[in-house]
Image 1 (cartoon, rainbow, N blue to C red):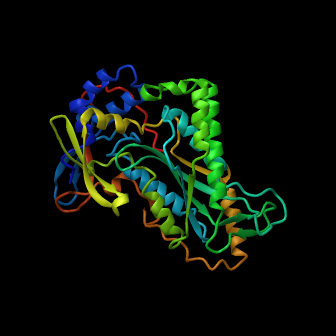
Image 2 (cartoon, helix red, strand yellow):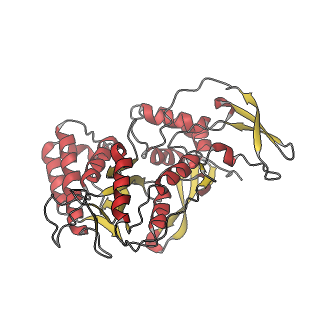
Image 3 (cartoon, rainbow, N blue to C red):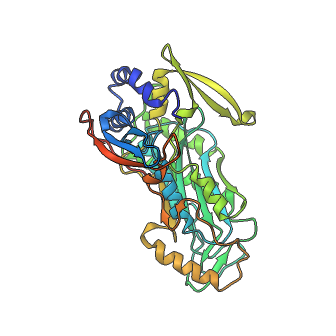
Length: 397
């Protein structure tokens, strides 16, 4: 059943006023996202007529916008992505790492901070140099899948990453599999300091290149001396890398990560009401044991917070590194499996793929189910677009 209130409804009723009020600061990406979400699954994008093979029920199914920021899209993309990753699982211990700043730094435009986050993640699980293994070094090539998250429960800006890392890797000469110690992957204090150093270095480089803009109360940070003092304060704070101990098997770890891969800042199911230009929605207060509470925001503030989490064009939220990198993943995984087959890993049985139908991956047709009898809905006609909406990106990364 569709939720009674959607983000698209808020955009339809208050989006134009928001565009006018923030005309000087609203970028083209944000405008396209608002247009895409508003038009999603409406006559503006066209669609098709479906008919049930069993009971003959007919309905009109409008096309989705496929925008990665839309709360109604990305469900199929998530299922397909998870199935592909499950096919690549290695039968070894798997670790979950999360990285974030304990306190928010001076928030500039997210277009600059996100590449800073990415730069850190590219170097986070840095293997030791090619030398004989010692008790202090793993001595192996590592692989990692990283998913970027930029929001908290109240839609405030809270950039952090979730990483899934196999507990080991092939040796540098490719002759054997090197496993990490039981219950231990990498020293988190070292990773935390590396996170802080790389992030602040990229932020400093962006400031020197003139890519940072400061507004309102942060306007004073545009002065080099004030910005340098702020960076000095941040270097004295504790930054956090949290390494979650292995739980279950690699399938459970990947399923946990799958909850974050194709999500947006808020789901439509959390919206309660829109009245008198006020938006009410639920949120979980994890400081109070995960208790569900209700927050009320002005529609203008709700839209502002939602758009805080729009990603720049061509920026990928999901990234793979090391032996899981896209360029050589197939060859590297084949090597890993060969090395693992030569020893007793003590790992779980082969992963089962719960996101396929038989021997084929899921498609949109698998979700075309009759609402009356549960039969299969077939396309019988096409519904043309009612207008020519503004083009938008449908990057699903």
